Each structure stands twice: as structure tokens, then as C-alpha cells.
Image (cartoon, protein in one colour):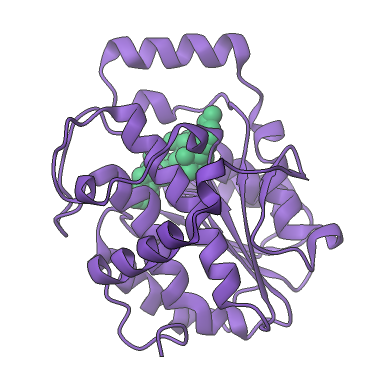
Length: 287
Ligand SMILES: NC(=O)c1ccc[n+]([C@@H]2O[C@H](COP(=O)([O-])OP(=O)(O)OC[C@H]3O[C@@H](n4cnc5c(N)ncnc54)[C@H](OP(=O)(O)O)[C@@H]3O)[C@@H](O)[C@H]2O)c1
């Protein structure tokens, strides 16, 4: 991976941090995106100390805010000559219905709209790579997901796990649609389930009962960060997948995603709705 430039979101902790370390260990220049300056600085220090690879740095952004994502994209365009691999990994769960500053429900705003907007804003920079890759961290919970477009802006009986599953289903639809739009270019896009991984995702925003349940479940059945990062690292770096695009992976293997993802009308509608809520201005994919 020497000479490859990687941008990975949500890499101040959990799967993203491990993925960043493992890709830096392979020689890539790794740039992480965090929302907290101290945590981002600490993460970069640890990546360098752990791998001896000094080609690491950080950017700052809050993925629940489109203004912040747009500022991030500008910052990245100023500082990086190209992106060889973009890993959309930042994600969260929210206990209650909350609207972001853009008027979007927080789960879908953070877990889907951030992937959609950042990727589109950085496409020109990814096209500068000889062989660009986009990796979207989805989840097996997408199998329980349904798309209810009204719930993107309205409280229709909010339930944390439904909102999360919906956002992760959106990651799969987004991957498929983007792969179709990028056909014939030098960019591939794939998504993945990392496994049930021992991270603090279920402890950050959630009330104590849910948080304790998450800790217990992952203690009993969760895999290590190292194993949880494997499919992201594989999709970012392996020659096996250099010509594979639009697929869902689990344990470094292509897996059939939920049946609902065969619905092309829904797939196209999600893109249209995403553009409506996240105007792209003039990017290469919307003319
Ligand atoms: N853990 C699992 O079992 C599991 C299973 C399936 C899928 N996933 C997916 O894996 C990805 C990583 O999750 P994880 O388990 O590693 O959780 P995690 O340890 O909580 O990591 C999530 C990362 O996203 C960042 N983040 C969250 N909200 C953000 C925001 N508004 N702005 C900027 N950054 C934000 C976090 O920043 P901070 O460090 O500042 O909190 C953190 O770096 C997510 O997309 C998740 O849906 C996880």
C-alpha cells in the first residue's frame, strides 16, 4: 500500500481506528477524520507509534452537520493531491428522535447522508487515483431495515434499532447505486458488515440499560477490533477485489444483501431523496 493515500472517517476509536492502524502498517498514508481535536491527535500519535509509518494525519468534522462535511471536503481538497481509498466508517446510534441542524433525523443524517455527501464532494479527488476505491461500512442489521422516507424528517414512532437498520440498509443501496453511476470509471465501491465487534458504539449516546446490554452482548459474542477491521482492510487493499464493485461483503467474502436491495426503484428514489436533502451542486455525477 506504499504510495496509496487513504481517508477514513470515524477513526478516533473502534473499527475505524484499527483499520487505520492496519492500513498504515501496510505502508499507506492514512488520514483519519475525527470530531474531536485531542482524540484525533492522540489517534494519529498512536498510529505512528504503533506502525512506525509517519505518513499519517487528521482532519476534523462533525458528520451530523452538512456544513461541517462541506468544510471538510474543501479542507481535504486543499491538502491532499488525490484519494486512493475513501472509507466511510463513522457511525452512531441514538436513543431518541432528534433532528440535526439540517432538519434530518440524526441516525440517517450521520450514518447515510454523511457517506452520500462526503463521497460525492470528494469524487473528483478519487478520480485522480489510478484505481480509486470507496468502502462503505454498513452492517448485518441492514437485513432488518426498511426505507421510510418520511422518517428522515418526521418522528413516526422512533425506535433506535429500526432507525439504525434503516441507515445501514441505505449504505447498501447507496453502494449499489454509486457503483452503477461509476461504471466505466476507475473507481470501485463496495460495502461490508464488520461482524459484531467489541466497540463502544452502543455505549456512547445510549441510556444505561441499553449501554449495559451492549457491553454484555459484545463481551459474550463480540469479535476483537483486529478481526472487526479485517473486511475493511481487505476491501481497501486486496488485489482480489480490484475489479469488484457494487457488492456487500461479510468476512472478506461477497454475500447476498437483503432481498429488498434488489428493488431498483427504491434504490433510485433513495438517491433522489438524498440529493434533495443534501444538494450536491455541480458534481460529476449529477451533471
Ligand atoms: N461494532 C459493531 O458491532 C458494528 C457492527 C456493524 C456495523 N458497525 C459499523 O461500524 C462503524 C464503526 O463503528 P464502531 O463499532 O467502531 O463504533 P465506534 O467505536 O463508536 O466508532 C464510531 C466512530 O464514528 C465517529 N463518529 C460518530 N458520530 C460522529 C459524528 N457525528 N461526527 C464525526 N464522527 C463521528 C466516532 O467518533 P468518536 O471517537 O468521537 O466517538 C468514532 O470514531 C459504524 O459505521 C457502525 O455502524 C459496527
